Length: 192
Image (tube, rainbow, N blue to C red; front, side):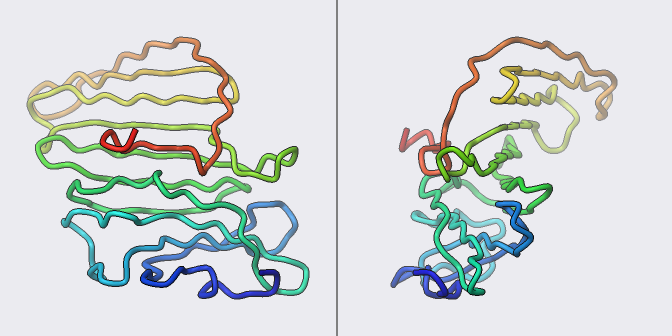
């Protein structure tokens, strides 16, 4: 599919909900990441259940000015939980996908991917999960930050007093340096 534009990578029955551009493969050409949803999904999905079957599609720019598929994340994005947003950004060759969802508890889930030159696939290099109860006035906050390149997990607890995080404590531990690729990430408990 070299030379094709973004719409050529959106399967039938689906539509593009959002896109972000930036250089993911360090070739000085703008690559594209699409958030693809079912065609009947509302245009404004804020505060509604996310659609089953939404996905991220990475498209790499080729030398002819077109795009080629670099990867698809069919199970990365949360489904069925009220959504507060999906933000995608590309910084220094890293795709950052940040989802916010929940009701009585809110989770901000961030995944970071970088192209692995040896395989030509996008490798999960980090995952952060920040959990709190809105408003922040009764339960401690928890942020778990995992770096799969260094094998370090930081768990930071925000100790809430009088409606604010009064102090934080952080625990550091070693975790396996895993190699999980974009296509294999599944953070949906019902699907795992």
